[in-house]
Length: 261
Ligand SMILES: CC(C)(COP(=O)(O)OP(=O)(O)OC[C@H]1O[C@@H](n2cnc3c(N)ncnc32)[C@H](O)[C@@H]1OP(=O)(O)O)[C@@H](O)C(=O)NCCC(=O)NCCS
Image (cartoon, rainbow, N blue to C red):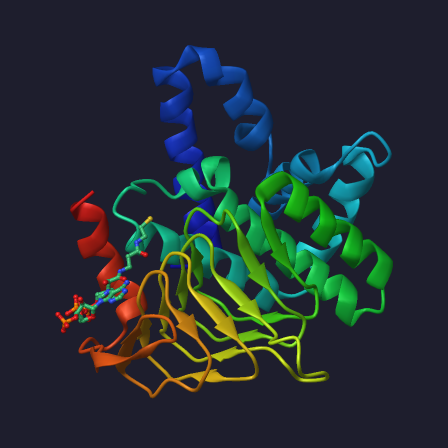
C-alpha cells in the first residue's frame, strides 16, 4: 500500500470518527482533517507530544517535518510501521488508530526523527527528543540505535534500546523489552535483532548477541547468548524450548495472543 493510500484511508476514517463522536470532533479536526499530508499530521502529533515549557510545538514541528520529509524512504518506512501495526494487532482496526492513540507507534516515529538528527550531527536536539520520549511515552531509545521498517512496537511502556543495538525489518516488540549492554563491554555492546523476530513482553537481552531471523523470545526471558534462527527461547537465562515454526513469528504469534485476551 502506498503512503498516499494510507493517508486517504486515515482521512476517511477520521471523518467518520468525528461524526460518530462529536466530543472529539475538534480533536480530529486539528490533528488530522486540517492537514494536507500524512507527514504534516504526524509532525504535528509528535511536536505536540514532545514540546514543553521551554520548547514550543511550532519549533519542534518544523524539525519533525524536515526529518519526515527528508527522503521518500523515511515516509515510506513510517507508513510501513503503521501498516505493520494494523496487520498484526487485532485490536487495531483502523489505520488512524496507531497515529491517534498508540504511543508505541509514536515513539518509534520520534526515534526516526532523532536518528536522522543524530546522523546529521545534531546530537543535542536528538538527545532532547530521546529524553522527552522517555518522559512522555516511557520509551527510551538511543538516537544512534538502528531500527528497520515494518516494526510494531505494541504498548511501548518500559522499552529501552541502547546505542549500538540493531533491530531489523518486520520485528515485533512488546512492552518492557530491554536491548541493553552487560555493563562489562564498551564499543559495540548491544543486541542485534534480525528480521521477523518476536520479542515478547518484559524480554531482557544483554550484550552484543544475535537473535537470529524469525526467532521467538518468550515473555520474561533474559537472553545472554546468541539465539539461533527460527528457534523459540524462554526462561532466565533463556534456553531453546522449540522451533518458532512460523515463517515470521513477529506477524503470526501476536494474533493468537490477542484473540485470547
Ligand atoms: C513463547 C510464546 C510465544 C509461546 O511460543 P510457542 O512456540 O507456542 O511455545 P510453547 O507454548 O509451545 O512453549 C514451549 C515451552 O516453553 C515454555 N514457555 C513458553 N513461554 C514461556 C515463558 N514466557 N517463560 C518460560 N517458559 C515458557 C512452555 O511452558 C513450554 O515448555 P514445555 O515444553 O516444558 O511444556 C509465549 O509463551 C509467549 O511468551 N508469548 C508472549 C506473549 C506476550 O508477550 N504477550 C504480551 C501481550 S500484551
